[in-house]
Amino acid sequence: MIQDILAEHFVRYPLMEPRDAVKLMYQAEFGPEHMIRDGQKSLAMIREEMAALSPKAGERMYEPIGNGLCRWNLAACKEKGIPAEDVNRLFLETSQAVKGDKRRFRDSLRLLEEMAENDETPFEAVLLDIFLIWYRDKNCPSVHHSDTYKNAYHPAYRVVSQKKLKDYLAQRREKEKITKI
Image 1 (spheres, helix red, strand yellow):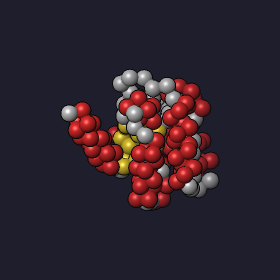
Image 2 (cartoon, rainbow, N blue to C red; image 1 turned 90 degrees about the vertical axis):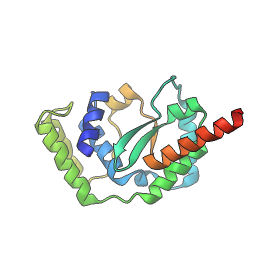
Image 3 (cartoon, rainbow, N blue to C red; image 1 turned 135 degrees about the vertical axis):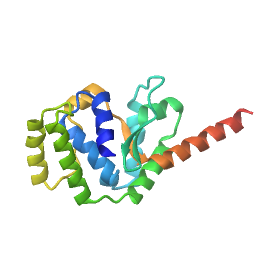
């Protein structure tokens, strides 16, 4: 349930602003479809992003965002030697498979408003109200993370199917076992 996912993210990322919560909900509903225009450009961007990362041991490989999707941490991929090509493949497959629903997304925005009104968010309800007036006026587009979020948490991930990612990681572990024998 999106409410539980939001609550987890509010604890893990207490500096989230309204746009970060809306981005999370947008990604959970629509997946990465808004990001893919060209598979080769996507791969080049992932390579560039991974090259610039300084991974730390023990980073989370992924975090669930709801609707069977997750954010796949590029720093963890780099640390584990996962090729950018594999990340891009799962990213593209997910973008083709996920088709969100605007009405359901708008319903989830109302849930976020309720959470803010009940002081269950790290930001004030009035800040969310102001953001949503602008956001709804623009017909609910995809948004970027806030500067506060970017500076505090340095997000570097791709949204992928959680099941496909788990299957991929299991196959990778099995393959590594075989090559070590």
